[in-house]
Length: 368
Image (tube, rainbow, N blue to C red; front, side, top):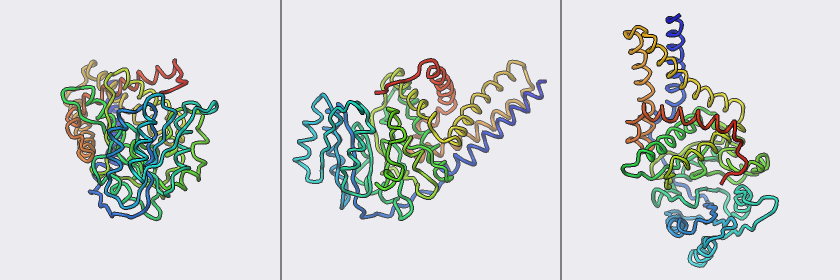
């Protein structure tokens, strides 16, 4: 009986290594990405709701991009603070800023997808680059780096939305590791020809891609997932590429409490239920295989299986997966969190389990 459990354990390890090397390795071991500057016209779209302090600080960074032809579309989503007043001042200050004012609508009240749709329709440029109101670009070449990946056929560009580092905060390390790991997944699947999600803090696409799928119409009633559900529907092997040069990153402040971060994880996991069947399958495979590895490893250890076979199996698994995660983290400038990989993996496994059962017994209705 013990031997059967061990053989199942080895099978799980083999499947995991095949996934890490065969799929996640496509990004981890990818060559540095060349950037061919383009002069295509771009609309940078920023939707804000009650983000007065953030937009005051970050909009000038967007306006200062080194790029020959771009506009900034600022969307005020019925803010109750000073966001609209600040946007109006920016509109006067910068000739390439356009303002879209969203008023409360009974049918679409508080729906960011509705606000974004108005902004996309108001944009005058054919290529759209999205970021959040509480985010800022890595530097003045962010717009150039992201737009450089557009080609005649590649009309969707997935970027990396990073979080600021907070010295001495272990929660910050967990959040940054989680973001890095998710980016490694969606970058890898995009390189494998199966793009399935993206981060709305750093995403670009040609306007025609939005209208090909009728925008957010198929999931307008879901009050979250404006970026992930759109990409899951619109992105294909032919039209999607990635941008992972450090200059193409955006940054924002991470959640400061575990409760707030867990709420974000609930939202993310809730949205995956609406993904395409294949995408749900590979996400479940990844999480189930992780859990199975730990359950079987603990069971074999408790049952005192021969350590001469058990320890090498565990070591091979960790070396293989850690190397892949390490290379991915290095590319995304998150090398410091990669050293914590074994600990982070366990934390995320049990966080995801907790979130899964919470969502089963407490269906989310409205999300902020």
